[in-house]
Image (cartoon, rainbow, N blue to C red; front, top):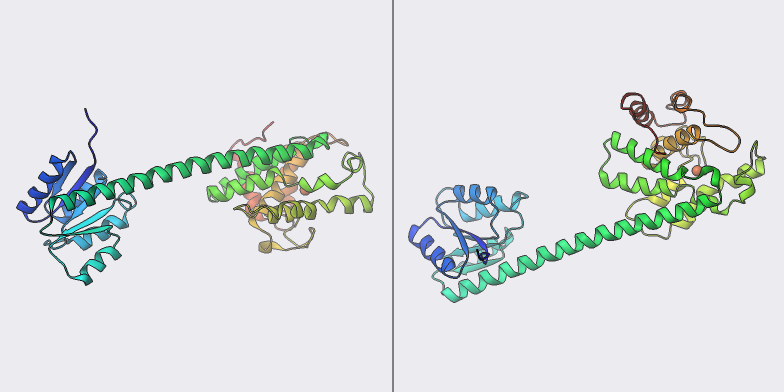
Length: 335
Ligand SMILES: [Fe+2]
């Protein structure tokens, strides 16, 4: 079967006009549905989206303007191009039609060729637009995937110098994203948090490897150097124009609820939610994993730690979400 040239909904309350309109279009190879009033047209368009609507203005009950307004108000028909076909030649009414989102106006009585030319043009424009939107969405998806790969590569570069914490950032990122989902954060924000998690210790690239790997206690000077990693990470990431606050999140991931954290001693809500989530994910992962100077402490010890400091060091809601994931939903950290 040959594919139809287009699926058109024609709306007119005068049967003779409606028949003329649909005959012209059918002869040209279009698939035409007709509706004799606004209500039927709305029903038909909602249940089976047409590619174009030809719409009379003056109709009893729901008139053409009202129908156009309704079509533009619902997501499934919002993008369908509407052409008014009407005897009205009043400019004010035409302007009103365009303001409602119509793409064109055909004045009755119309010339067959003019009507067909306009229909053809608008169908073509709309198809090109849809095609373009699909291409943009495809490209965006590709870019996102390469961004993610690139960030993961940077993350593993940092971890190469610090084999004892290999995989730390990835596991923290996964846990942080899981907490964000538990807190019902929007998917987009969760995605940004995941990326921030992947590179949250990026600033450690500037810390000498012997300090990073040193078993046992650090001197005050060494600890000061370690603390610098928040600022360093921020400085590296700041020039990149991410659609998420990644640099800020990295900067704040050691800030604590009561202001006892670093580098700025921010308190409570002054700390980005992303950073508050990352803080909890970071400490839990760190305690559960093995370190050069000790074996992993186990999930229970980590959960007791965040419970003990709930509200003082850690955001209570974030802690509760994390506890419920591990204790009630059987969450476990990725390997
Ligand atoms: Fe850190």
